[in-house]
Length: 447
Image (cartoon, rainbow, N blue to C red):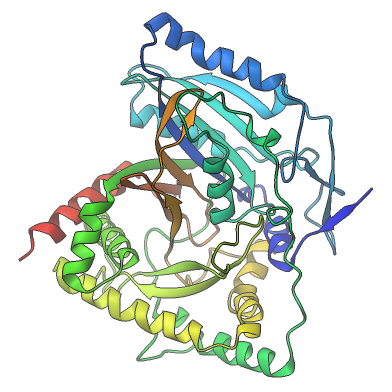
């Protein structure tokens, strides 16, 4: 029996698993039914697809991986391969109540997303959702963060679909995984100089810094605090061309515009609650440490931190503040030696993660207010047995003290936002999704 030892970052994702903090990420894929299907054929389409996929018993990496011990309390966690999947467990079928709009879809996904995974089984689930309006259906796919990060999860889901509308699509777990895709990242031990640089960078994040957004820059806010087990999920999407036009005119990046939309939406949300802090909210910004062309499965990510400009009323001034903040953060990370990146990431967030594991997080001053992540996608059309993929929305995770997460992913002509929040801590999260649209309109209409 061959074992695959989890990397340090993968293992950390397993150890953080808790009652109110399941450590899985997900993708919500929304499809239009194949052209030419009559209403009764559309109704049978998903059922027939599920039945066909449940008959596929071939399974490849990483879908065949199961923990050797079904517990987060282990010193050196590892996985082993299995070949006898219970596909009735891994594939579920649901139907939305009328009218089958975005609200009903978000409510169902929020309920499923709040359910913890069974650590005794391979750490993935497919949920087929019928009853969407406008001749659509959806598939919500849940994967544990110990197996994948956002980039590798998005790659697995989209690349598992067909490139042509006339192809029959294999189940994702039957798709052959190349040797490179299945490769685990073997991390060499950092040298003394790397550890010294990582320690210095991590300590800098704990002090006030006139040039850099640090943990000391983060104000307390109404959206921060302990979390419960239930979730809220909302989605939003925009044409990439609109966002890139705003970025080009301002000399900013697409990610800067994304942060500006989140900052504008949160500003309006907190003003309506009469709870807007005088200082700008801050965000943790995961950044990939993958080399170009690397599609391996697993977690390869570091973290920078930026201001969201929630204390700035003018949207263009907010974008300028955010651009300056992210440039300083990127320079800070890029100036680290290559071997210091992973130890820096562990040292920077280590005390917070330890407080999460010990159940003490969420009761003091937050080290950042929210998380904003942009997962790269692809422009090519994708199909599932002739059904066209319209949007893929990332559904990430939240943590005690940081009960709100924005993750976006591009597909085709659109950038798709998935917003996840603690149900108790961040009420009416749909207002934030609407606020993103208003924030973009404000940027576009500001001379």
